[in-house]
Length: 102
Image 1 (cartoon, rainbow, N blue to C red):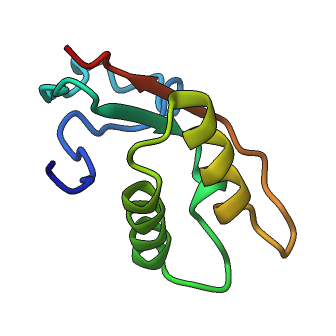
Image 2 (cartoon, helix red, strand yellow; image 1 turned 180 degrees about the vertical axis):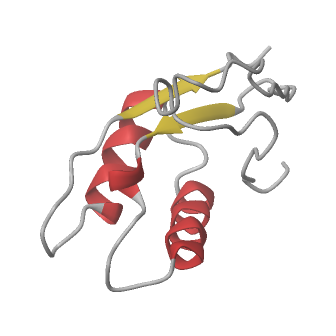
């Protein structure tokens, strides 16, 4: 299959970050192939004060590749275990949705 990737389309300010900005939010789309997974997560999963953000993204993609066949619950557990910060932990929220294989 295709390697894991980051979806950059549709990025915008966090909800309620700038109430004066009433422009429509950016949108993006991606086709989730059978067996594919979509992750939504908060910054606490990948951001660390001790490294640049790109290193967090790289670690996330590597862990996704390593656990690509896991079910949604197992994938979520593996990612949180592997990426959990050791120093001053931040809150983490992770949602994994996996499309059924046909």
